[in-house]
Length: 185
Image 1 (cartoon, rainbow, N blue to C red):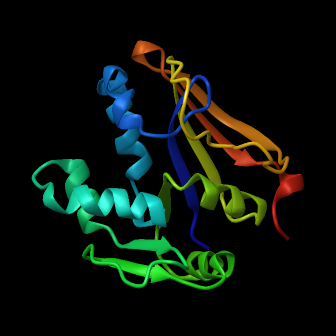
Image 2 (image 1 turned 120 degrees about the vertical axis):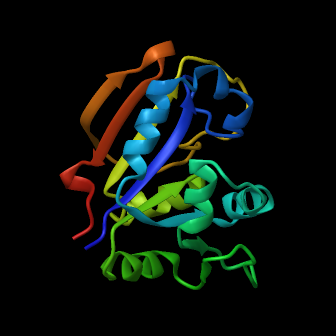
């Protein structure tokens, strides 16, 4: 079974919204090293509609550097019941019961599936026991406003700390797995 790993830039106050406005002062070589390691073995990306629309408006025009080449060249799966088509090359739309679609995707042969953005999708997949790893790059900045990774009303679920590392600039790289009691059977 394939591994689904979710990756987020997150502020000290839990904001994951618009990291392009606050992440870059902390984007040193060690953060790049973590990004390189976390993309190793990834052969598919899972996105929600909002993240897909934001990324599809920007990344297809970017070329010639590793992140752009990775995003443009990796198959992408978009979980949405409102989109009717996807135009970014290498993108497939997952419609209907998203939990079942992701479960089937994980059962297919292949490498790791990476998920970025799409906090609503993350929360539903965590509760369904489909997220295997949660990677957080916690930045030493208070953003104040924006979307939190876990919004009010999120259901309680346990996490197990797998690793932690302090990077240059005070960024914490934390990896969690769902606690055994919260994994789906």
